Image 1 (cartoon, rainbow over the protein chains, first blue to last red):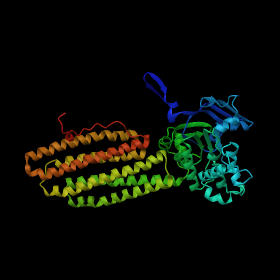
Image 2 (image 1 turned 60 degrees about the vertical axis):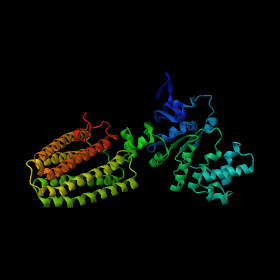
Image 3 (image 1 turned 45 degrees about the vertical axis):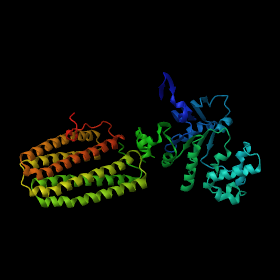
Image 4 (image 1 turned 60 degrees about the horizontal axis):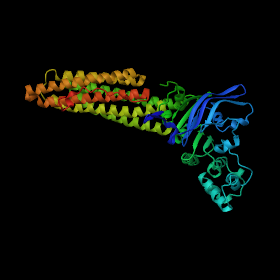
Length: 271
Length: 236
């Protein structure tokens, strides 16, 4: 979108809330002989929640993992095309994937607590990133994180119990301690099915957290719940058979999508 | 428009159900338009009473349609064309209910007209006007159920003719009243009836706009040219 002001061409997308955070061009992903992602072009905005929706196996999680090079760990995965974050090619040889992931964080579908106490699981991130100077500081951060994950009241009396003893839903909420362990460098948050094991109340609390995170981060969320995509995101991308079929304002996608495949999917006509 | 079936077939049955109610409502309303002017033209007070009493069934259907549409919104969270179907049902049922009210009003007034001496040709031209609106309603309901934008646009155009007939009738009644002041009571009532029928045409047009919205996702943006020169007070 170009606006002419005083004879100067200004690309309005790079100023204010519409700044492009992630720009993907002609992205292809192959798993061995399988062509999993085909010609994906998308601009993901800063301070915006972008939802990826589509049936299982459509490539939405694969594409999400490209954004912080998680696919590097899969030996048969091959990625072509161009993905830039703040204009910088993240697949450039000089980019350190570990540093990249400090900037582009990922919240996983399956919670992964360490075999340590609940307290230690939450305190780990802030401690290694040097966010707490004292035990008292750390206590405050742990409590804040657990409150943000809507878990404090449930676990405050058993912080020394093992993290693995939490229920699946509680573990998943515990991993939403994103704020607690967020390194100062974190700018983009990738979430893969963040609410798949949560009850409706905890889901609402996580969605509230996602909305809060939007004021500081670019958030990309993969979800099977179309209602969740509609509730939390401003932009929605529909993936089907490895293609990015349609990318638009969430309200447009859910009221009047352009592509008949999008229409079929969101109205519950194809699985 | 997506004609594939939903994976959850009960959703299809729900959407078909509310649209079937709209069609049933539309049938009752067509009938009430027809009978209200027939009662007037044939000076049949019993038929007029039948139209007045029949309006309750139309009102009851409107309530039923709205409750059912609200239930679908709450339970099925429809999106895209499904959402537009439910939204259009709310609007169309309101339009149909209003048209039914105008028929009822014509039926009520016909008693007063029947008490007066007949005016040659006055009620017959009113009946022709109502017949046009009735046909427009029939066509717009067909366009609705067939998702036919072309037919809906055609109905919108035809509302111009209704506006023109109204203007002509207005002048005709004015002439009658000037020629014979004893016809004033009857002509005033007839004029209100003509105005009622003209308003019916506007509601049919509004349904046609809903068809355009339902199929395309956007309301028609062009302003329909208004032909009703009588409502202008300046001399332009």
